[in-house]
Length: 216
Image (cartoon, rainbow, N blue to C red):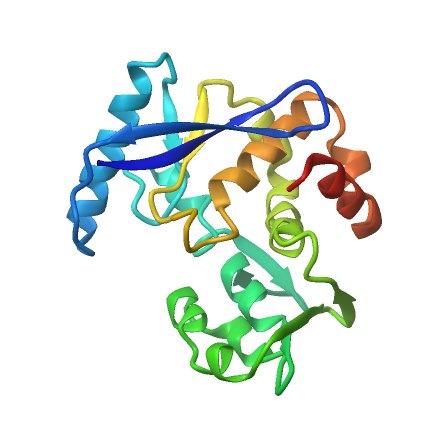
């Protein structure tokens, strides 16, 4: 058995995302087929608690929209060139002994995430993106800032999508991971439904303040 969260947009209070933990049978293995089985199990167990339909947001999603919303595929513009959220995030890291490694912006997402320099350059100190420095606290704020920048141009399309009760990311292991694309998307939906999206993304200052208030 395993336990993973379903991320549900919260429409009241300071909290933006509610985590509902679901236990389900786990199929071990790194093969995509095993991960797809786990998605089915997770969604099936969540449905017994009234959480349906769910959208899996990862490269393993059976739905094209779920794959497109993953950080490995979601596009972000840098200097009039397209990269992915994942590449922008990894390439913007500044360490004790190196970085930012901006060449990672133009790599394939999986290659960028596995670049050995990200492990061998010491402690992560900050992020640098488009000539500006960004902090590492709150822990998810810079990743979510990039994710929101990529989503924002598609906000009108997203606003029309009402069919999902929550979001999952089978790749996210809360014991080893910090950032989660499903949580980021749920937060975007929450702010949009509260009519707070525009003011929150107006500047990184307002975005960070909202993230601190939400405990993200």
